[in-house]
Image 1: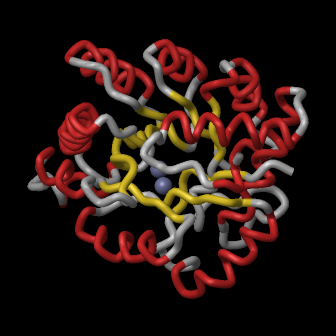
Image 2 (image 1 turned 60 degrees about the vertical axis):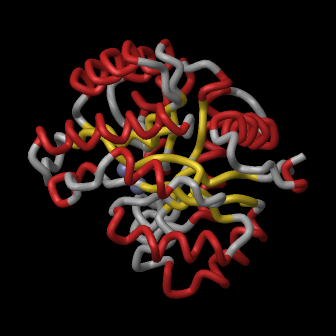
Length: 265
Ligand SMILES: [Zn+2]
Ligand SMILES: [Zn+2]
């Protein structure tokens, strides 16, 4: 079985941070060979970086989640760029627009989104985008910013309408699916997952949130990404092993700063 990447988790959050060694052992047993732990507050980035420095197969990003955008508007593009100089920091984000919760004023989310895009453009590192119920504004920002100069990006935990995924792919983006893909109610999402080009797909857990079937109600962890991978494979009519290889290849192509470990050969 080909090794698997969990392209989006939060290892510094309660539910995971308490016992990383046994969690990582379960990952090893499940074939999950690499994890990208995502930053949601620059303020908490030092703690996240310690985790990435401690474990060889954990990498991280730096950025401010849209929920926290209003609290970190003082973080500049230059600040973000500087923090990416560490070899374990391989992406920018997560950042974007969440109009479902609206935890942060929309203008703050928008300002944060654009300053992170500038950091992605400057560093050449991929931008991890969180977008929820914000299809049209997400497309508007992506088109506008791509016009100023290309940058690499992905839409994580995709749950939006298919037209956003299609437009994002046209703009060069990758689309990542979480455990939501396994939910019985997610038929429309599986239609989207089937329609996208093979070289633009990733899988993730977003752990400790959003456990896939059959772990719903439990705290999520990276080893459970296998369930999302299985659903994606069935949806697209390929073997699970093949899907593991496809999504791993896509990950290392996009996150090219991550040295591809021998176990992923
Ligand atoms: Zn997110
Ligand atoms: Zn997340």
